[in-house]
Figure 1: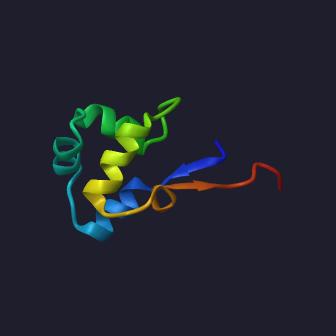
Figure 2: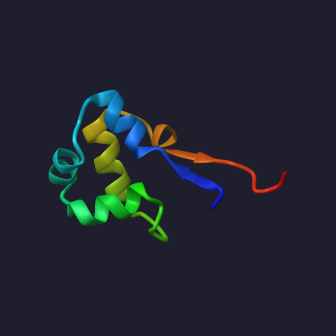
Length: 70
């Protein structure tokens, strides 16, 4: 997948646990885990906004695009 989700990196930088982020955002830990693993087809802007607010970051800090081509 050409979109890399770096939520784990930001959680580590902010010294926050997934459980705490899920509670702050209002989603289940299971859904947050799926998002961290890149196993979701999309994310609502409201959810992305809540994550960025809780982690004091920008969407670009969480998502990175890489080319598929060698």
